[in-house]
Figure 1 (cartoon, helix red, strand yellow):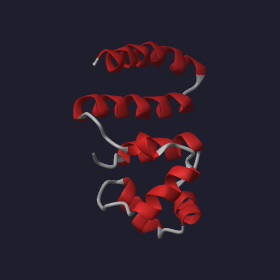
Figure 2 (cartoon, helix red, strand yellow):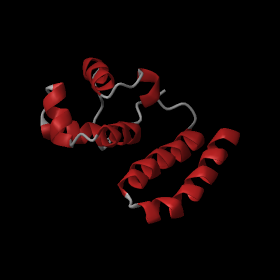
Figure 3 (spheres, helix red, strand yellow):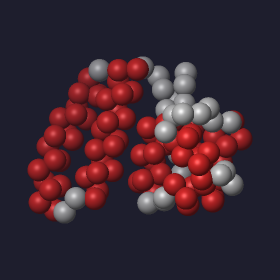
Length: 108
């Protein structure tokens, strides 16, 4: 199992926190936090616990299980973040795409 940095970014965005806000809340240097979120450095256990608590997610949310289904699920999560930023017209256009991707993830 491996830490999934895509889910970290998605969870942060869903909470509406900036990279700077997460760094401040966790007590991690901004650049160091960015490197964790970008997958460029390993996450320490104590920071992992802090991040999960701040983002109100179980530890299991951030851990990869199956590479293909996890990758698709990550992309769906990213689409959800983007969808929340669209106006109503844009949301309706992309909602059907998101639903079809969700059904793909469930069947895999």
